[in-house]
Image (tube, rainbow, N blue to C red):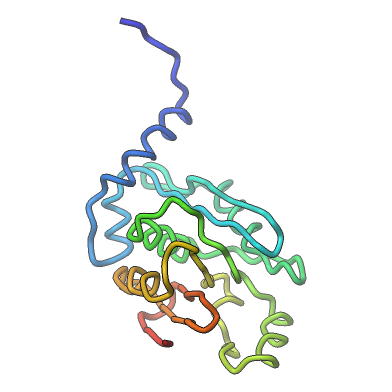
Length: 186
């Protein structure tokens, strides 16, 4: 029998591949994630900046501050290059939905944090942008997957029963937030 030196990170990466796939499902995103074992992961890329994030952000019942910082920077307002701490509950919903969709591709992030200036600019161009958007609080994300329809993504996000889910079929994205449970769009 050969014994090899296994680092904690290497062990966690190996465990992540199996724990997430084998996790039981529940009707609430936070219960769902509690059933996911000891690891939570988020995978995103930005078509605007070309950046990617693929990180484990929660291990053994605790968020990893450095990973949350990485996610916050990634989800910054790219127009103004400003950040606001992204609410971990939003990351949990995004992660749980991704797992429910059973995909390996990362989400394309269209919008994470929005500065008030960016939100006002977008409101002037579209009636679909809320004056007091949760994006300005770091509590929302607009996401797209090439391999799943808006309807499939929205249905999975709604199954988490943990926040707002907006379907934007014409623009091909789904809004997910950690605010009150509500659904809108077509």
